Image 1 (cartoon, helix red, strand yellow):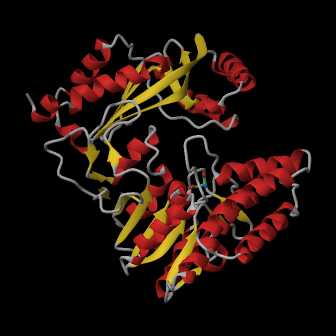
Image 2: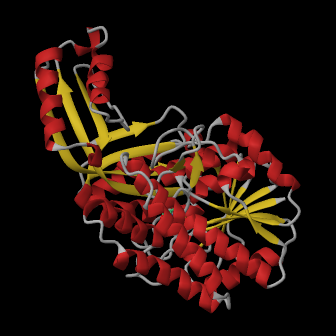
Length: 456
Ligand code: ASP
């Protein structure tokens, strides 16, 4: 059995959904179909999820929601019309949305989650109706009924262990299961969404639960590329990569596959294939437990901006028991998680995602470092980017860091930090955000130009 997930652009219009039906119909093993909310049809289009967030915000602020509600209903009406479905399904969707707008809003996050989740929920109902209308045996299955139990964290829920047991029963369904991505229900029966882009996570949970032979993740590119094609001209396609490599790349900006979606498939050894709805005969990228890496130690290079550094220094820091713990406790008290902690004998930098900081939080952190940790120096700096070289073969390859640092210096960028994880599957360079594109291009040239690949 295969689980396939179709992302926002794959289900953005009637034309796209017809492609989905053809793909599902051509392989009888494609028994579970996870769908996103309708995404962008063209560059400046707005995803239905974003329309729904606007709707929730309008409802919470002015209470005037007709315009925002109509924008969402129109998207579904347009799709239904293109698929030759009658008004009935659109009425169901409109009624559902109006119902959601009347629910209790004491908890703002829960209210927004209810609306956000409707994007995939209603799309799954619509797609199941379409499949049936063209003679495919298909049914919409609700995550509550199927037992997708998640933690009580609106906007960033995680599946709980019992979810897998419950969802394994989907194996026994007769026809095709059309399942909405992006949300589950808490143990108390309250709807909670995953992080943004989280339909990938639903697909992976389902694939693990039913022990699928393959999890196919359909998107709008032929494969995962070795670097961002918006920055590097025609980067090479990655045919086969490991879970760890994908995890590292998606952490640092590869948006093809959600970083939280790897774990469920990995734990049950379900291979993942990234494929293109618009070109389904292309082979795609396989994500598996192992690959042959002697020829290409580096498989991809990712870069992501939006990092800040909290720098502290104190003479004899290395001898001070509990210094690091107390520093991280200050961050925990501000609900800040950290990414990297490069350190020297007497200094330590904590690298965090900038969106977690506010001027007030920064001021509190600085004054607590001074008053409680008695540091010699402390400051916060912004606008850093992390560039990550990823590849399972890196730990066996000598001279790789030298090549990378030389390439970075060639474009005149300063390396603010180097971090090699103990797994040695990635090598991270902290640089100024403004240098990101030039560094990425130069590193790509260093490791992927024809002469680099041929070793000449
Ligand atoms: N529709 C959701 C989002 O835009 C989830 C997804 O598409 O995977 O974040």
